[in-house]
Image (cartoon, rainbow, N blue to C red; front, top):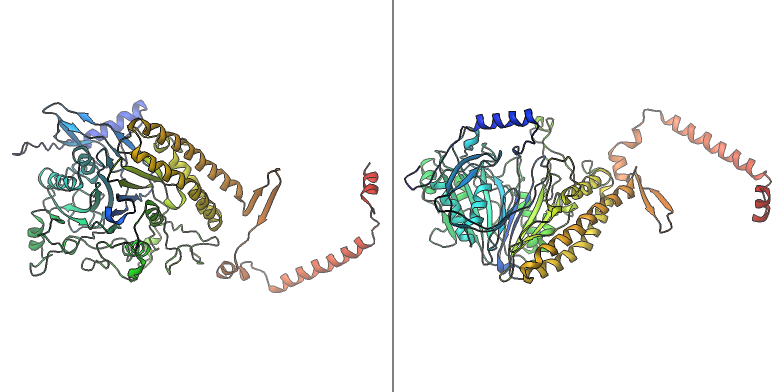
Length: 592
């Protein structure tokens, strides 16, 4: 027990986990402990003055590697007895590793991998970043108590404003247990959160301190008429610490000075002090940052060739969009794979294949043997678990938009509101099933994977048509939910989710039937079937070496064609000499 009265309780975690796994194996219980999943998310925060309806927007895509899909979970408001403790869980295993004093009342909220929104319209998004200092969880022979998952949940339980959330998370991690990121490596050991309420939006960066038992953090307010994008890199740079638009942990400057990451002569630069820039490969973060701002503020004509390093942020912290934004504008950003740019993943290239697929499966062993090899990293990537966007309206209820799986092949729709008391079944994933057919996640996964594996350039048009059909209905629902009575929310959300779930599975079956065995198969209303052979485009045949794909001399091709032509001519002469029925009546008599 610390002098402050907070309790930091490291458990004999490895023994506990081993015994639990053994028990599950012996008696056949399902193992409910989550396995670690690498996360490479893309976050966004939009000030209320930058949106058409005056709502702050905040969200993320959760781009996990091999993730099974996350459920949207509702936690009701609760009252707690005096002296009770709030358990703190390990992010990877879900096992308790410590506790803190509980407050008398906690607010209702929703979460997926991280906290999403609470009843007071405080909402979050997340993005993993590089960091000079990292730590590991107490559950993994480490020193730190708090993860992004627990910090966001605790903030949603206790805060009514984004500013409160920033201060609370910073205080907990710095003074009451330390912070660990998605991974203990410097490439992905830091974290960024975006947090908003109905009046403002913030970007929050956090990493471990040198002891591993505290944290370093900084935060910057997004200007009301701006949008900020966080693609796996710290974006807070020069900080005006005399302004209320910036917050910094008390230890940050001293640590940076001690390690030679700041010399006191220049204004304090958070990312320069604590970030290593983009990880994975050059342009991994920078290209996404450029593209988001290129879509939202094209008049800036930003240079797409820049890289983000430990000293160069390449692009602004935030930009003013060229027009007031709607949620549909953000959906467009999250569905992007650079189409129409020099970096397009659907251009006529061998990597895209004959049907211009943006799929670039990464992280294979052979790729690691190529020192300069890398694919463009799009905003909408094949391994996305979900995209979420919370609208924190200035009046009425907040609305959480959710698209399970890959955004470009999925559908955005309201999943929860700040007044809803539950989450509809299609937004829950039963991880015990290899495919949960009752989940919208698996419908979206089926659509995405069939499109990738068949004729993407054709299938994506069907998908976009379905999105254009459903999302205006979702928008109408969202507008209704903002002012609907609390008692209406559950039914409105559940009814639409059920229809959408059925509609997206129907889309998958239609894609399967239409793009099949290399043909485009269509059905008329009377049941007649037409199969059209699409074939490969000329550019791809040339690039693939179609003209010499078969090991045979050219003379063999010529001889084959000549003999077929000669035989066809002879057959035509034979057919001309045949006596044929002259009328349909005579033909029918012959058949009879």
